[in-house]
Amino acid sequence: MLEILKRQYYDHCDDNFIKDNGEDNSDEEGSPLDSDDEEEVADLKSRLQNIDLDDSDQLWSALSNTERQEFEALIKNGEADKLLPEWIPWWTHRVKKKLVQPIEEDATDAFNDLKYPALIDVPLFNELKKASPCVYFNIINVIYAYAYIALYYNGDYLDCVEDAANDFLTICMNMKNNKVFNNAESAIQSVTENVKNVNSLPGDKQTLLAFKDAGASILQGPVPEVKTIYTSAALSELHRLLTAAKKEILTHKNIANNREFSRKFLQKHSPTITLSEKTILLCLKKLEYYLAWVKSHEVELQSIVCD
Image 1 (cartoon, rainbow, N blue to C red):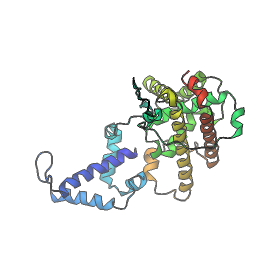
Image 2: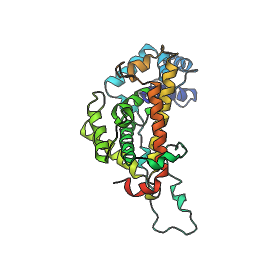
Image 3: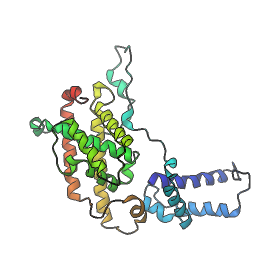
Image 4: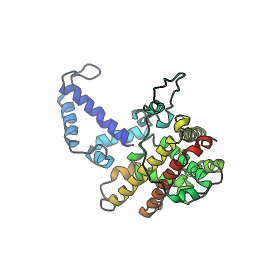
């Protein structure tokens, strides 16, 4: 939603850039831009001068009633999606193996071009040696829930962290209720069933197939030699998401007002569904445990992560 709002602003800025540089002073039909047009663009630029364009509420508050109506019209008629840039999920990148690799070439050089979210470094601890075999299946539940959220938000889940975090916890029973899974099938099916039970989340056949393919791709990794790196990246992204949601919750305690855009477009959940700082802290600890577990079981996971 924030990307759409920002795109609307940038479209105005592009027009302003063209006029300021004397590249064109006419509209698409060749008619000169009148003084009203120039004043309108100049006024918008002035209003947004000290606005944080990454803050949807600030950006919304600076728009005129006409500009707000234009934005709402885009949402209602379904044209808004056309303004979104194409997002290519990071887990779709694969390493192409060379048929012949020079002896002097370091094998790790083949992975330098991979693009994925930064990994959160966590320390290892002794308790990992006593971990239940079910940990692997619990991680699968978490990864598939992340895959759904990432696709649903078109990769922009960090732009609306409260909603995204809420959606994630709604469909991930291991995080929400500490449910333990005994096999991969039940871990994945749990996410599917929870998605279908939430009216605000799309659960059509195409969407469900897409998130399952995405989850499998994350677990498969870019190449067998570093198969777990995408799993760790997804867990790291969830850690960032929940950390940002915790920060936003604490911030909103002090600035509950002036959030018209968030209330109108982003916060679609019932007021009875709330995120607490305590809940998020527990989830963050669990994610850190899973990151450490994956890190300490890299060798074993080479053979089972795609099963």
